[in-house]
Image (cartoon, rainbow, N blue to C red; front, side, top):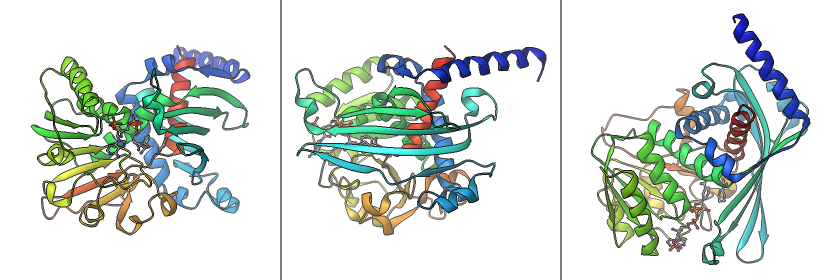
Amino acid sequence: MNSQQQNEKEEKDKRKQQHDNDVLFIKESVVRKLLNWNDCVDAMESALVAMSSASSSLSSTSSSSSSQVANRDEPFSYQTPRTFTMAGNDGVLLTMPGYAANYTLSMVTGNNEKHSTLACKLVTSFAKNSQLNPPLPTILATILLFNSSTGKLKAIVDGTDITAWRTASVSLVATKYLHRPQQNSILAIVGTGTQGRIHALAMLNYFPNAFTRINLWNRTKARADCLRDELNELFPEVEIVVVDTSVECVIDADCIVTATNSPLPLFELKDLKEDVHINAIGAGINHHSELPMEIYQFADVFIESNVGIQTELKGIAEFINGEIGEIIVGRKHLDDASGKRRTVFQSMGNAIEDGIMANLIYQKFIEL
Ligand SMILES: NC(=O)C1=CN([C@@H]2O[C@H](COP(=O)(O)OP(=O)(O)OC[C@H]3O[C@@H](n4cnc5c(N)ncnc54)[C@H](OP(=O)(O)O)[C@@H]3O)[C@@H](O)[C@H]2O)C=CC1
Ligand SMILES: O=C(O)C1=NCCCC1
């Protein structure tokens, strides 16, 4: 490190210490300005690795196992299954605590500096919010970010956009490792609410030359029309088609995103191409009601983390091939023998992703 770098580091450390004395509030409009796809994908790739490290699988439930991993140099994480508190018939509050250590953000920082984060996301899901006038997002979130050495609260970060961006970013990482879209591909977005919209933007931004057409389907067609108009403005080179049925949406697709509250499957195995990747995002009664069981049976199925699957992915746990992080670190491989492959990324969302995202936003905010 030369003397200029040394000075910059000292300045940065001083600023960090000042900020550590306050509790910052980072509001939605500020968070939004600090989000970009490359940084988010980098952060989520680190999160997935931290969740799949050998040390993380020792963790979470027993405090004795924590001491076994505390001195390790590799990324690791602890999280417990999240809790669900019902709020009347239509709403639910989830609490999502997590700790991640020794992870890097090389695309953001340009170096291999290690980070750690301790955070708890509080997130509500009120399905009728979209019918309010004016409407509110269904999913509203706040992330409490703590100093990971002292436990002192350091920031309250609006988590609504973070939830949308981190979910889409994790899908980008999953798509990159399980499928890697080729040129002239067709993307299907089944459900054009908040998640469907952000996934369409994510896919087109992150895989810029892959998709020549996007099929959009939504139960309420006007919402799909709105997204078509927005995408037409942003990506005039891509053909955007609003279709009448969810089957029509997926039938010729190479890559599919499902992002609805549907309690029933939206298409069948026979409606799919042989070589297809699905990012299944929606959480109906459980987290896998958008796809029929036969798709899980006849696909390679990957998830973010094994934590919580016994409750939230009950029914498909037996079909899960592994965690995305295991593929990233090379512990698991996809079988390439057939040349054709159906892959499913079953998304759940979890606290480690939110904590790492909140910390990323915090770092960017204090450096403004
Ligand atoms: N995996 C993860 O990490 C995360 C998952 N989620 C889940 O993703 C899903 C979408 O969330 P979000 O986009 O924020 O919510 P929105 O309320 O913005 O969108 C909900 C979408 O689901 C559609 N929908 C609702 N009920 C049905 C049904 N019975 N059949 C077909 N479509 C239906 C809606 O259609 P319409 O416009 O007609 O109402 C709309 O397109 C939810 O299940 C949510 O819980 C959310 C955040 C993170
Ligand atoms: O991970 C999240 O955040 C959520 N997942 C499922 C639905 C509510 C929000």
